[in-house]
Image (cartoon, rainbow, N blue to C red; front, top):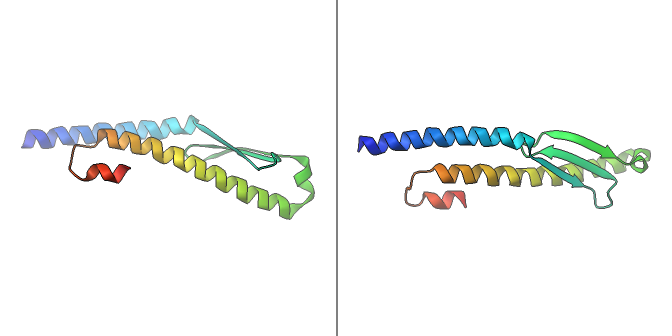
Amino acid sequence: MFGDLMGMMGKLKETQAKVEATKERLNSVMVDEQSSDGLLKVTLTANRELKSIQIDDALLEDKDQLEDYLVLTLNKAIEKATKVNETELAAVAKEGMPNIPGMDSLFK
């Protein structure tokens, strides 16, 4: 019994290390998003850190429009980055989980 418990603890520590390595790797995975007309482009990491914003000169003339573009485009980029992040971390976590009945449904 203790052998199984020690094996599970070792597996969990190994999984934790893999999750941390995946989080670090996600800092270099870039997610690009742009407005429907291409006037605003943003780049985030999969860890949702903003890396760049490109604004077409046409948007600089209307502050309210620019703010709307920023909100909409950043929200789409954050949603996309979150999906990448969650998918990657769930895959690593699921891979390292011990085979406990009913637990597999938590990571779907």
